Amino acid sequence: SGGIVFIQDITKVRKLEQIRTEFVSNVTHELKTPITPIRGFIETLKNGAMNNPVVAERFLEIIDIEAERLHELINDILLLSEIETKLKDTNLEIFDLKSMVDDVFKVMQNIAKEKKISLNNNVRDEVLMKANINRMKQLIMNLVDNGIKYNVQNGSVSVDGYREDGKVVISVKDTGIGIPSAHIPRIFERFYRVDKGRSRGMGGTGLGLSIVKHIVNLYNGEIKVNSVVGEGTEFIVKIPCQP
Ligand code: ADP
Image (cartoon, rainbow, N blue to C red; front, top):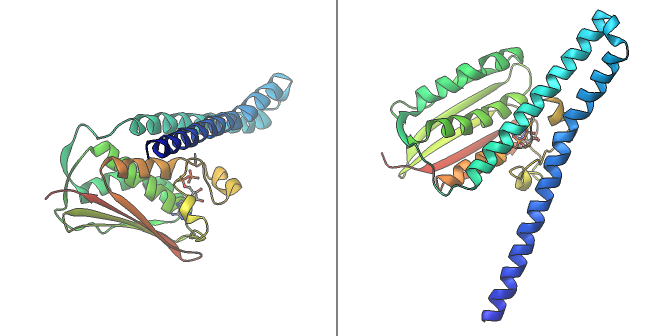
């Protein structure tokens, strides 16, 4: 049976190597994507477009957007590699979930307003959690951000939170476009997008849900998705957490 274990190990190592190679090639591709227009528009500006202030301003705006995307991408890649190498989180503090969701909403308020999406904090009173606050904010922020991005005008994103069987349950529910069921098993993979063109246009890095999944794993939690195309999506996170 030792031989079988050995063969399984080799298969596992190969599989990991393959995932790693794929990741590096994806990262390279994703990093190049904003750099191409940045260099292109700089070149055009140097070749005379600068003489037309209206055109120049439009090109600078594009360069700015692409540079911002690059910045987000690098931040997400760094964050992912940081949490991936961790087995447990550090800097745990006790905090109130409802006020934390209020803080997250403050950051998201402007993007939500632009898209006419209302944000509802339905977290119950006195749900106390012990965790790394920044990490939990990141988790909720990524889910709310998606809830806003993949929503429709006058839609909403509602966050609920409560205790159940020694776990804190956090639900983030939107009234958006939904996810076709065939795609659901893959949405937590790095850079996986249901609609590549559409998601890129919205400024996503394709890493948001992998970051969420890794944070959930860091706390031995679980995450589930319920989604109906054209009606909306609900992400439910359960994290073991003593009262
Ligand atoms: P992205 O940066 O592209 O949003 P994510 O990892 O956050 O990357 O999500 C992966 C993909 O899952 C998205 O591109 C989108 O197709 C789909 N998705 C995630 N959240 C939602 C949602 N709330 N409603 C509809 N589709 C979603």
